[in-house]
Image (cartoon, rainbow, N blue to C red; front, side, top):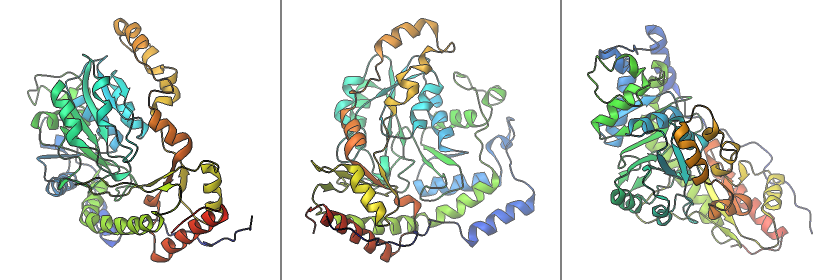
Length: 419
């Protein structure tokens, strides 16, 4: 085989959405000396300072929801969302194995049981057709995830949820600004939310925001955010199960930055979609390579560009290594299979002294996290999925042209067809 020469001899520019507006906003807060306005007291200070309230107001308007609750991370947001539901230890919550571990951890946190349902081959989101088989008398909720930036098939999920009277939390950490039937994803579930971690579309360094139109859930999430056990009497809260609060509070500097970032979101999102569509269009006719499918009535925000490789005699590792040699950056193999993590394989969460004794025997016997329960996810993880982490870069037109040229060289090297 002919030796191939390096095509991209420079590093892609790292994504940076922070500009003079964010500097000015952060400096304004620093000059005020008020870096947080939260107090765990049953008065207006319970809801945070001026910048938190402004940030939440901007999010409410953008997402067109009744309540937006800022938190110091999306992990905190997920914990608060699960705690806001009327759940008890031993209850089951259905979710996908293809998500960040925090999604499942938020379930375990409340001594509930994650039940993993396999994913769709084309969107990589939880498969609605497989959810109903996993529902039992203990099932209380579904946490669906808009993985990589593509909205899950919410209508089909809701049909099952309504049938069994269970709630839906929508983890849209990857998909801020994505649309499903003309509405922002995350806004049509019982509770939804987004991440403002540094490598998301926009960021506050760390942070997240919960959205809901349900007054009760909103109050409970605010209680969990800010030491709710200290002020339930002051707010005359009757149902206090799971209101063991935390310091999930977002600071004033991060909130001020978040307000400026939200103003830029649509422009940033449009730019990312153009970059992704250019790449996808250029790679769509490569032999053995399937580009992501965007379902009807949906838009994709492209946190990651997922590609499925299906070549009989050439392993994924070889393709990625060749592309790396040519200078392509941001490629990785597979994604995640949470049910295969040690904490689930060894059932650490369910064998600990902290788990209810009367449920432990039944749960350990009933719940299985063995390999083979999510075959689509497992196959993609082991052999087929290539992820291009477009979230890391501010790609220029030349970068995309050279990436496409590198793919062509690798396909030519292996004698494969391409457009």
